[in-house]
Length: 95
Length: 230
Image (cartoon, rainbow over all chains, first blue to last red; front, side, top):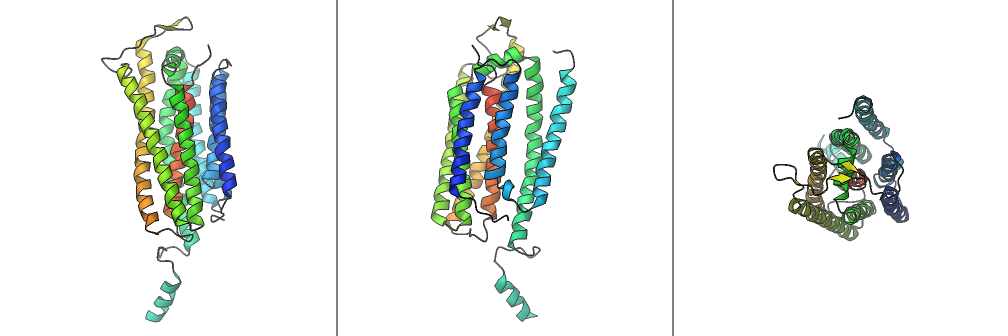
């Protein structure tokens, strides 16, 4: 149901988790992981984005399936843009 | 004819548009429309993120040097400020759903304060960049000449700062528009326009605010935290 009302406790829980993950991403940046620093930063950011989308933006409890189709499509188009562009530039001579 | 119309209008919420069957269908249609708009926004910011990722791969040393010239403390505080504003928006939508008008107005005003605090801190950061001559252009100047033993090319570091100002600038513009929307929302909430039956503007303005928060969630590690290892 789109009218599904979530408890305040859940919102506070998501809020605390987002703040903790912000601290984790700052900490992870100071550790030398080579090329994986970028990957770790993007994974943590995506985790935060998923929490915001599912709970703050109510997508988890949405009854309207078309909304979910639009979101998945948008992410798919974004991946087309990023993955195809980067696999092109990534395999060329740099600079 | 007149009688049947009168019966129908008596059952309607005054906010129900006549081409919708009921309030739930109207709310779902608005949410779907907002998500379609957000899909275009994802592609708009996606283009800049794509340019950023390509140049970051090419000019990693310069991007790391540019990233180190930013204030991590201010960036992290701003991230926390936006996350807090997303909480007040989520709780605000809940207050609208449960019909608590005063709580809704308080939470919307808190959101506005967090939004303005974010823009204020961003302004302080930009002013510092301006004083340091880190704005790309004729008067651009960067202090460092090397990082981790690798030389820094001043032209390449200007690309970092161009992307920094384009991305944080477009994000800040979205924040300013968001503040405008929330002032409008606060006024109408104060007037008591939103009820548990009709709170669609609160819900979809909230979707917009959360989206702008998500953009910053990506901008913060990508711009501020590129290479902090000693």
